[in-house]
Image 1 (cartoon, rainbow, N blue to C red):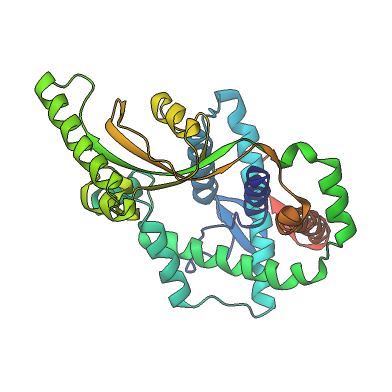
Image 2: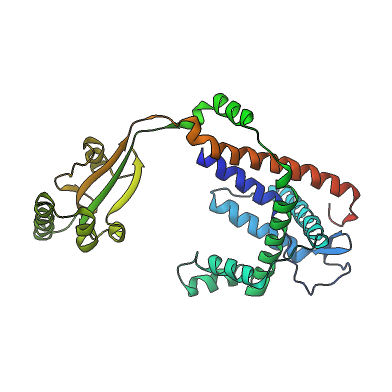
Amino acid sequence: MKTLIRSTLMCCVCLFLWVSILPAAAAEKASEDTVAMVEGTPITREMLDRGVEQRRAQMAAQGQQIGPNQVSELEKRVLEELITGEILYLESVKKGITVTDTEVNDQWTRFKSQFPDKETFDRELKTRGLSESIIKEQMRRRMQVQKYVTSEFIPKISVPDTEIRAFYDENKQLFQEPETVKASHILIKVDTDAKEEADAEAFKRIQVLKKKLDAGEDFAALAKAESEGPSSVRGGSLGYFRRGQMVKPFENKAFSLKKGEISDPVRTRFGYHLILVEDKKPAGTIPYEESKDRIRQVLTQQKLQQTVLAHIESAKETAKIERMVK
């Protein structure tokens, strides 16, 4: 169900927010570099090429490759997205919608935080021929269009409970959940090919920690102080997980324990673990009441997509659009 929501949202983002990244100081009339005109605003070859490159990068990240014979079709799709973006942007301007510098800077900060360090960030921008000013302008326009779509179309959309219930009843397969376990662990690291002495030392350390837990010490506190895994900052918490998400020895032990039980030392390729099972959920169907809000979100996004698509098609019929490329 969560995957369905994510894919619907991403579809809406691609449809509504692929806004041109033409700098504000760009030319206001067509030139040899112009591939389309929208209400007197040029879309340049540079914008189209950059848009195609961004789309190819997105597809590559998802394991999709574009062959030489598919480039032309991709260019057509991106050009139409740029035209759509320009139409929605111009409409947002007419509505008086604005985005503040603070909003843009906040988005910029979140964008930069996705990179491990400044060097990687700068290298990625250079590789793609981008700059801070270009990206911020792109962000501003996208955020402005998003505000316009949110304020103009979402208030007109309603999803009655009868539709939600019908969706749930007709798509029960989307609401099946496998058996899950909520667990925490304490890890003492040791490589699988470690020397016998190192392995024995790690095993000795984990046994000492097990004795402390058996004597009543708090698991979370001990995990924070002693665990060598990344979850130590959370008291060893791994949250809920299903089969197939953990290495086999760890998974087998976790699913065999009862709620509240702590395992004996478990060896994996990461080292020795002590596992505390905090909760267990059997496989089953998520109840309607627990799914209702998520279904409403999906159906709202679907209706939003349909509404905006219809609006775009109508707007394209009346807007002054000239395409210079076939």
